[in-house]
Amino acid sequence: MLTVGGLEFRVVQSALEGRVSRPVFVIVHGIGSSHRYGTRLQDELALAGESLSLDLPGFGGTATPGHPLTIEAYATLLGRVFDALHLVDAVLIGHSMGAQIVVELALQRPDLVSHLVLVGPVVNPERDTLRQQTLDLAEDSLREPFSVKRIAFADTVRAGIRWFLRETRPMLAYPMLERLARLRLPVLVVRGADDRLAPSDWCADLAGSVPGGRLVEVRGQRHVVHLTAARVVAAWVIAFAAPGPSSTPVRPAADSASRAAEGDPAAGGSAPGGVAACPGNAADADGEQA
Image (cartoon, rainbow, N blue to C red; front, side, top):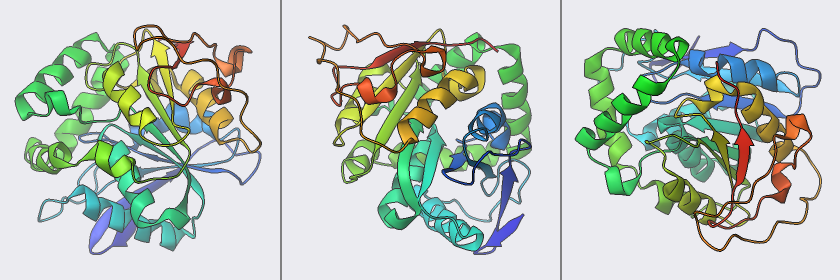
């Protein structure tokens, strides 16, 4: 446990011992959740480097702040957590609202970040009302496996509906696309192909807003793809963060409905370096059901 600016953070190291100390992977959860969403991904990443996850203030059993926190405030505090842990050049992986936080941290403290991975990033500006987000979340949750429902219910109850709703407002207000477009870092966007909260066109716009941005869509998965298809997502993240030149991009598809089909790198398919850096092209990978 760390206290930064009077607020509690929990830092969780993978139970699996990493083979090497670099790269360092750090997973940041979304609203209403905790580090438990990232445990499977964290253990997979630990086979390739140091792997950490966090519980943000008010979530995962940490003390609830006395005032709402903006995305900018989360990022500033998270930078201080990194300083306390002597972390630099980390591969930051943010899920849902956590994707907003890692983008903002990369803008505030570029020295701390080497690569960004945005999993199920929010908020799609065409569906940026509390009512619409609630409906999309409910529909997505109904289709998730029971293991996801169990974690989601427990974490939301632990955080409390009041804190959840207070933090929804800054999440909905954060200008994700505008802020991301200011970065000049390697960016990988990952979504479940059936994710209603992070639709394909929105994720393609995000990937296309930065030079060399890449998009991977995992078939048969939804918003919590990094939990339900952890091995597949980890393979793409590890390949994405690996040193060395990218492979030659495939030719862009004619339209957003025509995607380039690429395999799971863990199963011998093409690595993310082969994904075109344009919003009209994406890798399409098979997922594993939890």
